[in-house]
Length: 55
Image (cartoon, rainbow, N blue to C red):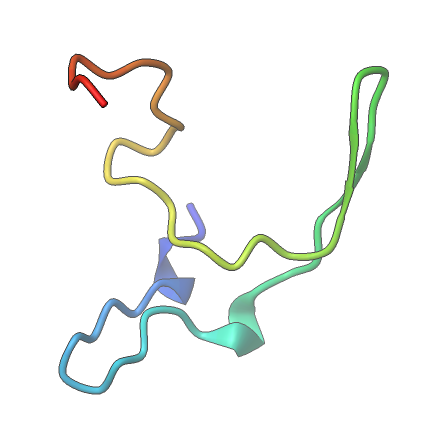
């Protein structure tokens, strides 16, 4: 769902199609967000909750 907007073309340097990006406008009980998030979706399709790597 929605993956067609992520081109991921390293040769051209184009990673998403801005014409297929829609603005996010969320107002919930705990936070609100306005505007697009201009980063690619993770390969697993959800954010990383924790990592075993030490920083």
